[in-house]
Structures are given as C-alpha cells and as structure tokens.
Amino acid sequence: MHFLLNTKLNFLQLIFAAGISLSVALALSRETQLIPDIPFWVALLPSWLSHFAMFICHIFSAKALSKFISATNENRQRHDSSDHLDRAEYLPLLQRALKFALKTVLLSFCLFIFEILIYFRVAQESISFGATLIPMWIIVISGILDGIICKSQNLIRLVIWLLIFAGMILSVLKVDEVIDDLQWRVVLSPFVLLFISLSAYLVYIVYGHQVGYFQLTESQLTAGILYSASSLVSVVLTIVFAEVFTSNRRMELPIRLFITFLAPLVIALVGLGAWAVCRDEFNRLLLYGGQASVYPMKLRLDAKGWTCVEGKGVIIIPLFGEVR
Image 1: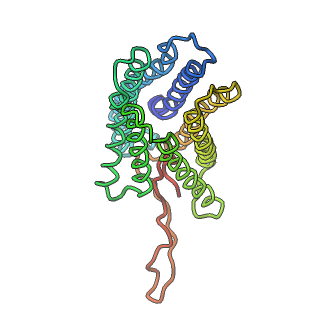
Image 2 (image 1 turned 45 degrees about the vertical axis):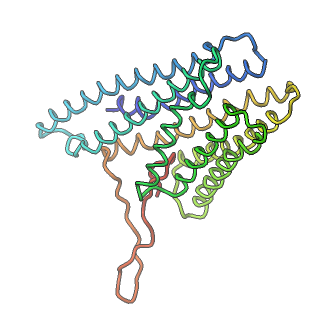
Image 3 (image 1 turned 180 degrees about the vertical axis):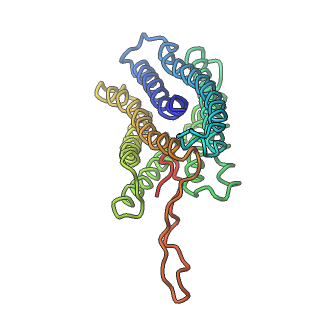
C-alpha cells in the first residue's frame, strides 16, 4: 500500500512538473532565438517522456492496488492481525485511488494530444490555432459545466474557468482571424485577471491561516506560498508577453532570458506545491484508509442550550486538499 500511494500521489506531480518545465524552457529558448537550431520535437521530448513515465506509474499502482486488496482480504481472516487497515473498510480508499487515476490519466492524455497538435502547427503549420486548442476546449468546457451543474462547487472556480475560456476565444480570433483592431493587451487581459484573482484567493487562504480562520499544515502552508509566488510571477510574465507582442521591435537579450527562465519556473513552483500537499494526503490515507477524517466541532451555548456549531470543521480546497 505504501508503494501504491507513494507512486500515485507523491511522484506524479514531480514527474509532470519536471517534464513540462524542461519542455517549456527548451521551446522558449527556440522561439526567443537563444537556441534557434534546436528541433521542436526535441523541445517536446521531455514532456512526452513525462507522460510515458506517468503511464508506467499508473500501471505499477494498479498492480499494487490489486495486491493490497488481496492481502487485506486474507489478513481479515486472521485474528492476530495488528494493522488497523485490515479492520477498516477499504472501499473509500479504492474509490479515491480510482478517482485520482481517472483524472490524471484524462488530463495527461489531453495534454499529450495538445502537445502533438502544437508540434504539427509549429513544425509543419498544417492546422489552425483553434484546432490546436481542441483538447484545451474539452478541459475548459468540462470545468465550466462542472461548476454550473455541481452546486457544491466554489464560485471562484467557475469564474476562473470562464476567464480561461474568454482568453482562449480572444486568442483564436487574434491568431486565426487576424483582427488588427484586437490588441494583444486585450487578448491577454483575461489571463491577467485570472492570475490576479488566483493571487488574491491564495493570499486570503494564507492570511486566514495567520489569523486562525484556517489551520493549514506545514506542507499546505508551504504549498500556499509556492502557489502565490507562481501566480504573481505569472501576472508579470503575462504583462511582459503583452508588451513584447504589441511592439514590433526585436526582443533584447535580457527580456529573452527573463521569459525563458520565468515561464518554466512558474510550472516548477506549482508542481512543488502540489507535491507538498500530496505528502499530507498520503499520510492521511495511511491513517484513515481513504475514509473522511473526523474533527471535533466547537459548540456555542445559546439560550436554548448547546445547539450551534461555530464552523464547518473541515473544507476541501482545490490544490490544498482537506483543510481544517
């Protein structure tokens, strides 16, 4: 079981972040003429290898899950078993493992197809920019529908998906339709609003920990700081891109180095933050076997007696997991 959860929760973020970051760095080095002779397929190779490594991790995890269920069924027949998970219901663990596997497989597959389409567009110029974004359309529209249909979803998550959708539409209109009146500052403005909103939300969570509204673990607090830094850097990077696209002059060397270094850094910070959170999720799964944690909730004395609770006790926050 340790191998199962460690593979699925702890390694995937690092593998994914390393592969995508390196590919972004190589691709930007090619586009900014720092390394102009590098083939585009070489730039995408680290990302493709990361997808393959994630697939191998899922295969090993599925085998480990099967062995865990078989061993648990055998140990439940033994009266001298001392492992608390042998006496616990493992169906929640199975559900969470399958849910995590399904999400990561679908996301990895969509990104892999997206990278292949990018290769055909950049290397062969055979497809339009709108067609290149087909996997992204699927992910974003699914996120919007999920935010509308599932009433339990946070409104901020729906707003984020809508901003991404608006930015993609404006980008397609600018690139494919070649609308001269549509400035790059307008095209990239939804992404600037997106990163500003994320930064404000992350600052709210970290500040809520400082005042006691949230009780973040050490790993969750570290992840919050990494996410905040990544979001703030993304705002600066998007503004720089807007200025570069707007001006017709050649990029100077400091700007090229600035873009090439910061873009993969953003992805690396998000990956490290997700890895830090997954360490807590891993320990929680080991402790509770996938079942929901139980936290004591404070009561308040009213005229009618002890009737009201003062808080939700625990809440699920995207990219942070279970937060008290």
